[in-house]
Image 1 (tube, one colour):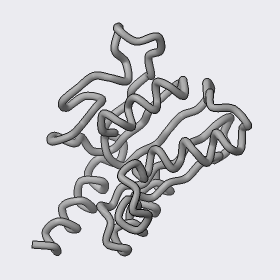
Image 2 (cartoon, rainbow, N blue to C red; image 1 turned 180 degrees about the horizontal axis):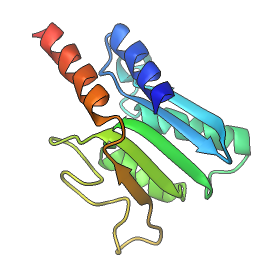
Image 3 (tube, rainbow, N blue to C red; image 1 turned 90 degrees about the vertical axis):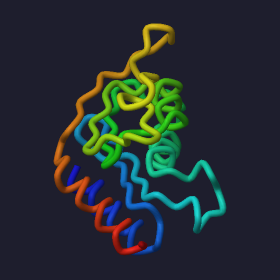
Image 4 (cartoon, one colour; image 1 turned 90 degrees about the horizontal axis):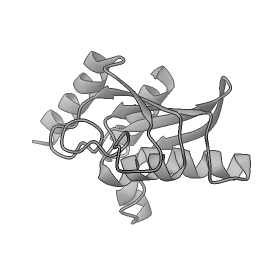
Length: 142
């Protein structure tokens, strides 16, 4: 999660919403992402999606069944759906996203019984640091 926080800080420095994600398989980081939809002119360039893309490329497979994704912010509905599609085993996130959260706050996509795969969810890891980073970013913009 500390590496995800570093990536989030990089995103914030670049003027993006400070969210970072790291995907780990068997103890090794195989994917990293820092929010960058503005820089990439890509609405799907969320940290989680970028980490999933990099890891899938490295694995040579879109299924990441033994993976754990660490994210500083609760994934949105798009990212939660991507976790299910990739068959990610576990999601560990820091702060809840009360406006757009697709895992706990607004929707429960990643572990829905309606879908063919359920992601194990762990929340609140380094939550205070994750929340502080987001609050500082938005306070500075106001």
